[in-house]
Length: 390
Length: 153
Image 1 (spheres, each protein chain N blue to C red):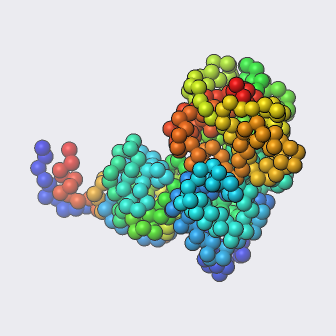
Image 2: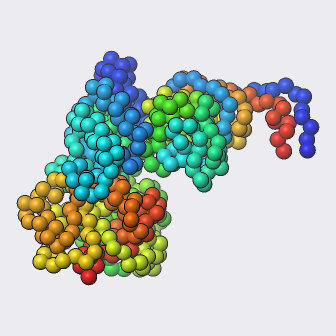
């Protein structure tokens, strides 16, 4: 691939060892995908933050690269960590785990990366604009950025997003190029989706059956809310490797396959991921709850008392706003828990004494079943809250 | 049972696409199946721990690891880095068609990586063959040992 003089200098090691390593990584990826050059990015979002997922191998690497003096050169954000960074003791996180997690956070602090610790970075006053290039790693946020915001990002991994954060560039291939963003399939939804769970089930079916295509989805109501689109994005990225879809009528009709999705297809996913168990824990916030969803929950539980344990996961930023508006107090007075910086999938919270969970997310169900061997029962967000109260 | 052949060992030269530079050689360990390093390989020993993988309980340490491509979480890149750190890394990796998890790991750990060879390396190379990988040119030399080749049924 073509490199500028400045990029060559970095590759030769004249700008530091960490920068050289980052450039080697991006050039190798660029070569493998026949990228013609690098493209400047507006922001980076890095995954692999929880000690539960990266373990000592990841921590060792982060220590090494951060000790070289490399810092972020574009606005850079983090995916959820393995615990609430201030209230971890209350949540039963061990001293040992917390110590390692805090070491990971120190590495990122050294590199001047913002500890946003959220999977919805587009709610951090930092949403990219149409046609802006970014390097994001959280798979659900990648789909959201490409499809809803119409920004351009490939599905990065922890190491490549970190390299892009340090250098402010990404190899120009894949979703950065218009020719790869055209719809490849037309999906006609033949049933009503209604609640958030419907979108989550549809996304999971699409990811599972269409692999890495760009589906254009017809038959969904005009302008679905960002919360519903968030659910759609998350599940299609969890069950497959879709990076983008389109719900816009004006997009060109794809010449390729037409696929009809009926109620039966969605039921097939529900049967796969949802059991009929009666569980004591309800987890909301995969992906992280938006302020609007926090408000919905607060309004439903205000003045009532939970019969089951309700965990509400969101970002620190949204939690602070929700606190100002009184939503956090309403939820906590009703016996619920508002937890930030982490989520049900990447924290060790389910590893002791939780045999099953009620949730509203196919993504959560997918990972809880495979990584933590925890059963799940799926309902829409409002049904989950009612379940916790009943 | 076939008798052990007396023909001398012979060499096969292949040419591929260089992805990560450097030289590495050693005994080959070959799999026909993609592998996830995250949860699939123990970073301290180099032993394959994925209960569902054909190489389960075998070590990739100090060997030329031949497999179609990586899969699973991008944390796999950190596992490859850790293998190097603990002295349990493969000396080189050959893929059919590589992807970012393996590329990332090989860059972080300075492990030569070559893919898109002119012959299918998971067919041509057998576990136990001697392999030399040149990640600067993309050339791969395989030495088949006649004793072993003759005894394979």
